[in-house]
Length: 204
Image (cartoon, rainbow, N blue to C red):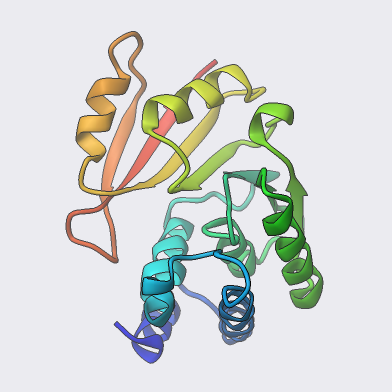
């Protein structure tokens, strides 16, 4: 799936505005430029960036309530999914908090936020920071049991977890629920028929 096809889906299925699409184009160019010097995304996925990274991240906007204060993106890396969500966001009272332990990636994120005038906040390693968002999102961060542990021990309030996962989503849920179970739903991914989005309620 190439750029024009993905843009069509972003506009028609996910309600991205023309203004947001322009920002996504600039964002992808910044990622690809930086990727020549530092490994932000796998080289093998560069020519599929719109499908593998942009659309995969963007599909989360279907499930996010933008009327809350913030969403926390754990282990954001190059800004997936957090910056894509922030680029979509139309509510000035809402913002995304990007947690990333790599100083090189944090520097890259700062440059993107400044260049695209985004309302996002950059923080360090999730275990050294406070998580006080109503929504926690992540993609390629850790195994589900580790994510639940982080969200249970570090997050300050009840929240929704939204996690982009591959074909082992159900297996990871089963392994994570050995001690305590949480309400959850599995949604199908728009980018891969075998991948899933885990939507979970973590009540403190």
